[in-house]
Length: 145
Image (cartoon, rainbow, N blue to C red; front, side, top):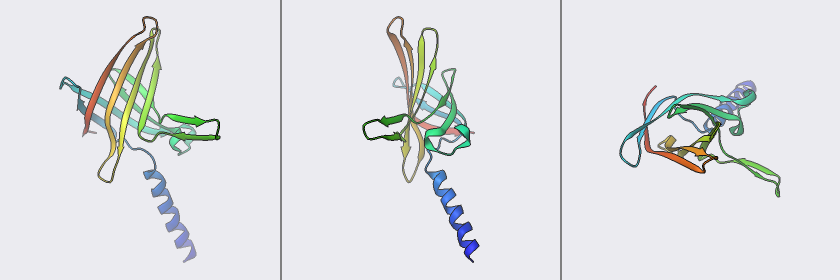
């Protein structure tokens, strides 16, 4: 009986830890930009650096506007308190290039009814000319696997 209780507790602990991670269903997500045109986010897979299941190690491979990102939760380091946390409401990724960088920020919703992305911003920054561009996509819906 004692082994059964320990096994049951272990299963519940595992399930609880899985729900602690942000989840973006793999497949195609579609939304609209401010002009009403369709925009797309492709989600491939979720992994964890060094196979350590921790929100700071969570990575999700996605593609937006031809760029493939490994996105992660933004880190927050408070050196005065000695605390390292993360922002569970966002994923972000950056790709450096010869002119500057492209970045992706994904807004997440965590509710009883829905867990997943609601919007994203794809940003192109040219540090040489101090110019940039941004694609905003809102009202994301999962449309296929």
